[in-house]
Figure 1 (cartoon, protein in one colour):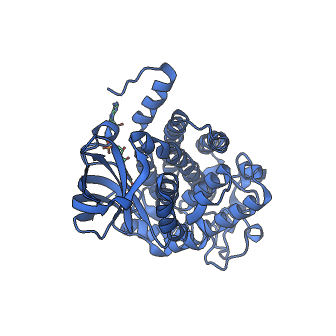
Figure 2 (cartoon, helix red, strand yellow):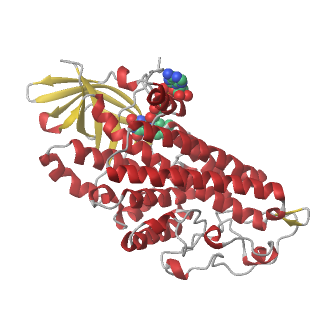
Figure 3 (cartoon, protein in one colour):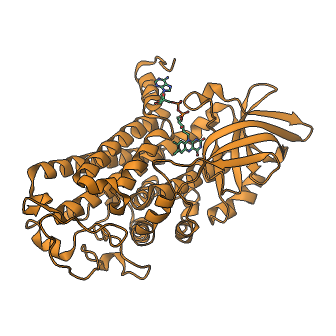
Length: 448
Ligand SMILES: Cc1cc2nc3c(=O)[nH]c(=O)nc-3n(C[C@H](O)[C@H](O)[C@H](O)COP(=O)(O)OP(=O)(O)OC[C@H]3O[C@@H](n4cnc5c(N)ncnc54)[C@H](O)[C@@H]3O)c2cc1C
C-alpha cells in the first residue's frame, strides 16, 4: 500500500527503516535452485525470492507500485503524518509479527509477545485518537497482512470493546476502562453469539439478565467468544427477563459463575483464542450495565463498523497471499524455468491482484462514508460479504500456485488459506450479510 516499504519481513527489530530496506530479503545469496527445487520454507527463511532466484526470473518482473504491491496508491490519500505512521506499522508488522506468528499459529497458542508489539505501537487507542477512518483501515490491513489472528485481536479490541465502551458506556465506565484499554494493559471480549443462536441471535438471544436489588444476575451460554480465556472482562449481551430488552454488561472473567473453555482444533485463526463461555448466576452491580446498550439496535450500531473492519482484514490477507505467491513463483522452477514465466501462472497472479485491488477500492470508499458519518449496515454487509469472498478466492488461487507446498504453513500460504475461512464466517456469514443487502435492495426481508 505504501510505495517505499519492504515487501519481505526482515529478521530482527533492528532491521533498517522502511525506506532503506531493499525488496530482496537480507539473506546471503544462495546457489540457483535445481530445476525441481522448491523455495525455502518460512520456518527457516521467508518464502521470498532469493537474490539468485531474482536473477533467474524474467527481466523487469515488477513495475512501479506493483513492485511494492501498492496496487492503487491508497496510502497516498493520507496526510503526511498518517502516511508516516502507517509506514511504521507496516515495518513493525512485517518484522515483528509476520514470521513470528507461524509457530504460535501451528501450536494454537495465544502469543502475548505479539500482543506487546501491538501495544507498544500504540494501536490499542486507534478508536480514540481522532485519526481518519482510512488510516485506521489501512492499519488493520497491514496487521492482517502479517497475521490475521493478531489483526482480529486488534479489531475486537478497538471495534468491539473500546468502541462499545466509548459509545455505549457511562462517563464513569469510560474513565475507569478506557485508559487501561488504550494502553492494552487490559483486554475485553465481545460475547454475543450463543451455542444455539448464531445467525439468528438478534431474535434468538437467550442469555438472561435478572435485576436483583442493586445487582443483575446473568445466566446462559456463549460460543466462539474471542479472547474470553485471556481477557479481564467480557461485554456480555443478555435479555432482560423483565421486559425482553437486550442489554450489555461488563462482566469480570474472574467472577464466580463465569467460565470460559477454549475451542480447540480450529482450521484458522489459531492464535486468537475462541471459547465457550458459561454464565451461571453471575452477579454484577448496576454500574456494570452499559447504559447506552438498549435493544438490539445498539448491537447493530457496533456491528456496522466492525463488519467494515473485516473488509480491511480481507484486503490485508489478499496482499499477503499475493506477496507469498509472487515470491514463490519467481523462485520455483519447473520445466526448466521459473513458474513466473508461465502465462497461466501470471493469470492467477493477475486475478489475485485484481481481487485485492477491488477489495481495497471498496474499503477506501467505505472509509469516506465512515468519516462522513453515512455508513449504513447495508454498506458494511455488502463489503464484508464481497471482500471476504474475494479473499477466499485469492487465497485458493495462491494455495494452488504453491502446489504441494501450499499445504504446509512452512510456506505461509496454508495459514492464510485457513485464516480466510474464519474471516468468511465471523461478523455474520456470507449468506446473512447478503440477506442484509438483499433487504436493502428490495425492501423485503428474506431471513425466514
Ligand atoms: C473464528 C470465529 C470467531 C468468532 N468470534 C466471535 C466473537 O468474538 N464474539 C461473538 O459473539 N461471536 C463470534 N463468532 C461467532 C460468529 O459470529 C458466528 O459463528 C456466525 O455469526 C455464524 O453463526 P453460527 O456459527 O451459529 O452458524 P449458523 O447461524 O448455524 O449458520 C450455519 C450456516 O447456515 C447459514 N444460514 C443461517 N441462516 C440462514 C438463512 N436465513 N438463510 C440462508 N442461510 C442461512 C449460515 O450462513 C451458515 O452458512 C466467531 C466465529 C468464528 C468462527
